[in-house]
Image (cartoon, rainbow, N blue to C red; front, side, top):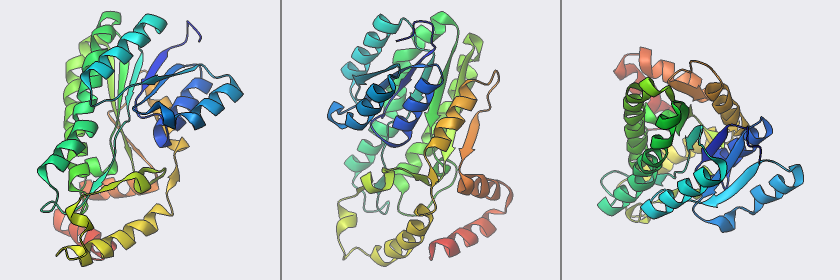
Length: 280
């Protein structure tokens, strides 16, 4: 582990964007702490680390658990002495019509995607303020700035994350701590297959079934055209090495296409186009 390397802590590093970013940063001069809830899922990452002899440490960190977060951050600071970059990547998607998703399912979604970010960020910030430098990268989504049907819990958690990130950007500026939002569109990861379906949404007698099936087929077509996850890692690296990074970085062709439309088109026009695209 290079003592002079900047130190990056990444949550949710067992696959997808987290894994790809851990490898990318390690290959570009960072000491990386790749954390995850279940260390049994680290086999793929371990093999690459060993074969390339990368400066990556793997540690257990469950963003939903106060003690787990505290223990992991203490371990990193004890061994590496500092944390220069925090990448809040851990998260999952919950599908279902808003009416059908139980309140406890909504809470579980926010516990990981939103409160987990707060929990890890609060644990890291005292050290960053003390060293008067750092970068916090929050992995949001295109769905943090626009909504689609049957993804209400996930979309809401990302909308909340966008607001939190804007707040942090102002609050942490006096300590030279940068706050960055990464907003991927469809990315080729296991995110979709790992998404959870709300219990009530599994009932074929749901009044929303036909609408869910129609929109699901359209969304599936876009997944086949998903961008590789390495472009997210490249974007993160470009942002954290920039002396004055932007707040938001859309990633992927669909993100760069949809977000400007969402911003500049009249709401009724955008809504009409999106409904057509989703077959609603």
